[in-house]
Every structure is written in C-alpha cells, then in structure tokens.
Image (cartoon, rainbow, N blue to C red; front, side, top):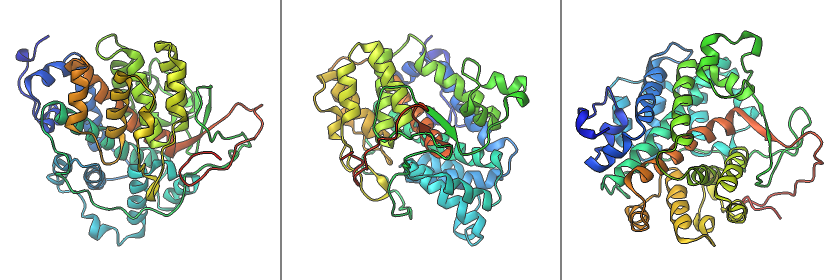
Length: 401
C-alpha cells in the first residue's frame, strides 16, 4: 500500500495526521497500520458525539485544556473552533470546578488519584458512566497529543520549546499508595514482573448484563472488571481495542519486544506499577533479556511537585545503545508535556530504525499514555491474596528505602 493511493488527510478524516503535517516518508509509514489511523479517528468521533452525562461542549473544553497542558496547541484549537464551554466562567459552578480539578490530576499527575477523588466526582453529579466518559476524554486527548507531537518530530517539525503550557493547580501530595486495598488485599509499592491483580473504584457493568455490543467492543480481551468498566463507553472502547491490537499484536513495525519495552517505560514515567508489570514481563519474555528489563524497573525516577519526573536519565542507564535510545525517546515523549527532541529521533535513525519502526515507537508510547491514565485513576493494583504485606515505606522520590 502506498501513500499515493490516498488523498492528503483532512481534520474530518484523520485529525492527528492533519495536525502532524506529515512528510511523505512518515505518511507512508503510518499506512503500514491503517487500523491505527482509522480507529484513532473513530475514538475521537465517538468521544465528542456520543450521548452522555457531560455535554459535547464541556467535553471539548476539557479536551482543549488537556491538549494545551500536553503541548499540543493545534489539537486545542480544533476543540476551540467547536465553541466549547468557557471554563473560566463555568468553574464558578462547583460541580464543573470539581470536574476540572479531576481532569487536571488525571492529565498531569494520574498517580496521585485515589478513590476519594473518584468519590468527589459522584458528589459532583457523575454516575459511573459519567466517570468513565470524563476519564476517556482526558486519556484519549493525552494519547492524541503524543501522536501529534511524536509524528511532528518524525516529519521534521522541531517544536521543542515553541509551545507554552498552562499551569495546573495540582494538590501537594504524594502518590496514592496504601498498604492494602479496601478489600484487604496487599498493594504493591515496588515494580515487578510478577502477575498482579487490579480492583476498580467505579462499578463495572455486571458480567450478566453485558450485551453483544459490549462484548464485541473488547473482543479478544477478558471480561474482567477493567474491560467491563470501559464498556460503559462502548464506542471508544471498540476503537481502543482495534488500536491496541494493531500496535502491539501485528508483525509489522518495531520488534514486538521493543513495543512492550516502550509500554513499560511509559508506565514507569507515569508511575503505573500494574501496567509496567504486564509489559515488562512481555518485554523480558520476547527479548530474552530479563536482566535488562529488571534494570529498567529498578531505576529510580525522582519526582517533583505534582509527582512530575524531574530526571529520566536513570531509565536508560546500563542498556545497550539501541535500547538506551529507544528508552530515552519513549520516556521523553511520555512526560507531560513531552520532552522528546529531534536529536533523539536522529539518534534512532543513525542506529538503523526505519520510518515504520519510529511510527510504531510513537504509537506504543501514545497508547500507554492513554492506558496508564485509565488504570491509575479508575482503580488500583493488588498482589495475590496470599502475599504478606511487607511493603517498605516510600521516599518523596518514589524510591523504596
């Protein structure tokens, strides 16, 4: 399939491609996985047109705010042109102000979110469907922002430092990390490749109430609590499932071990122990390099205000040249806002990465920028029930003593 067989993208058909202003090589590389292009647009369309507790105008306003926070002004402008709610006025209503506070947390510091924050959304008038919808508005926008930023870098647009990002008033607190869940199960504080469980803070759709449409939306996945919860926004979940499959399960693109590595790196940056455990395990299995994966998991990521990572360099320390370059770009792109640079892209090209592999790397990071924000803010991880509670206390940097 060649790029010449397709018209140039428009915002209506491919918003991400239009905002990225792709060069021919990057545009061609994206077509190696057309499902990602198609279903990214479908997720966007569902998100801002499907009925729900939040009006499309309010969803647009929140998405514009998130896009600006992530250094994607073109994406913010796309929402602004649809006449969104003016948040500077609307936040005089405490219920709207509560939504904005939660969106800021989910956008910039998802690891700080706990069940009390979710309960505050209920107090602001959201039911379970509304909580999932708000979460998807923020998480999908974070995904789109990384696609646009990463693809613009691949296309030769060096926007480094060009976009000012508005500050958010984040609470002065550390990561939500209790010793046990509400059900008494031990909670992991250290990164691991071991199998973990996950418990929701929002009620999933009961298994016996799932429709064929719900089940089709997460076809190929389990009917556990996570996907039954996301099925409350069926159209977005259906698109997400297709993107996930195309990015991580196909043969085309970056070696699969390195896609999983990028997912684990993104999860370290966002401080999502559950997602990191799953994808570090896969990266270790596929690469047969468990020691290198464990080195990544053990790396300390110091945290500043709002739990933002202050130094990402430890993540690639001790890795070979290719993995170090992959990790550096993945970690920088995962940060909010992105810290990825043209120099990091050039380094990967010098190491032989083809355009389709670079696009795959960007897509892997972007997808887990979406996934982490859902996993961290709709529930939490737990160790197997028979695991003793022996977690060490954590320092402000997130490193265990």
